[in-house]
Length: 223
Figure 1: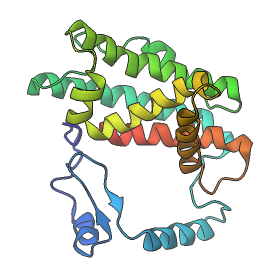
Figure 2 (figure 1 turned 45 degrees about the horizontal axis):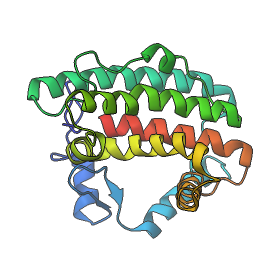
Figure 3 (figure 1 turned 135 degrees about the horizontal axis):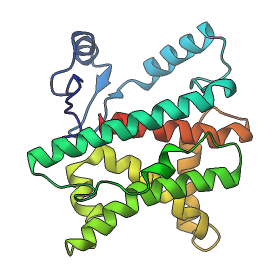
């Protein structure tokens, strides 16, 4: 269901012509229910480096400029809400596992008002909102069905790409409470942080980079 759309997106099972070329040369791979990925890291890094040089960037990852972040966040959040509503409609029509039940995700007004993060309190607030809107609402719906592991079982198996993003949101939200108590949580948190901020040395920028990547991955997973 994550690869279907009522807005004309091309399902991964029938990639567009230019994507077929990438697949045929073995440059891009895909797993069932997962987002496409570059199979040759060296080739991917080379392309990223060339693009960074062309755009005169010091990082391989294209970070939204400071002056454009408010607008970028607002547009991305709007797209997520719109496409998520359409995904819910498609899920209902297909009569498969629902995400939030009949009333959709709660507190959408809080999510629509999030802004770019620049410090720890804003970072925590962003993940608090995302977790309450999307993860906790799924868990509550599952419990209403008598399924305490609904998020970890049904959602994970039915919507793996979406689950990956939501799991990251859940982890970033809850890890702040357990980093000093649980060494395993601290280790996993460090792994996620290093992975999401790879190549970004400016610590003040790293929080926004994580936010940007989460929102980009969220929208991609929905589509």
